Image (spheres, each protein chain N blue to C red):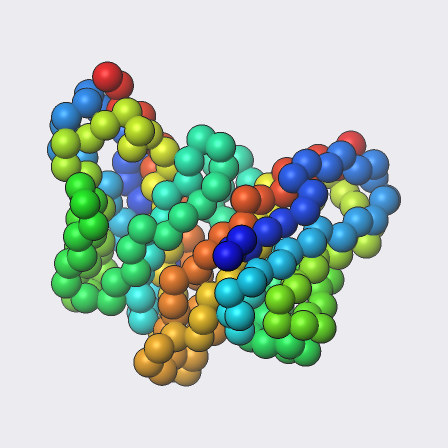
Length: 113
Length: 117
């Protein structure tokens, strides 16, 4: 079983819909990252969080440390949100992890006009 | 700032050939990483570096070597290319975590698509 699991693997939505992507992990972590990979291949960091909730524009990320679960929400989705969304964790190894990340397999999101 | 740059963007190698994937960052980041991304799989860490002269293995280091002679550059060397090394390679960099253990935001290069035939 992968240490970081995302669901769903594929998600299709109509423009304007509210979208949720889930991430569960099985290890102790110091932080969780949400990344976006565009069709052209480039990867950008959306959020890094270790507790609570963060918001940036139409994107909201939440994390529940006790349940080892995080969600990425997109409000009022748009075709330009079509991308692969990747969850990654920095493990809490009792000392510094040097920023090493363990990745989920990604969720392919397609938003139709 | 150019951020993280990688060259080449694409490359086709024959089995047994060698090559170096270049990675440069201009953000004065201490930490640098090499990942590979295979279709349908999550990114895997190949090697990482916490500063000039210091490197260490990640999850999938076999068949690769790295060096870090400067803060800016972190080249990845493939000595004897094999079809299993066909992948997209990403370089990334970050500052050390701001508060003990942990991580900071990672900045990724555009990737190098490598095919070994």
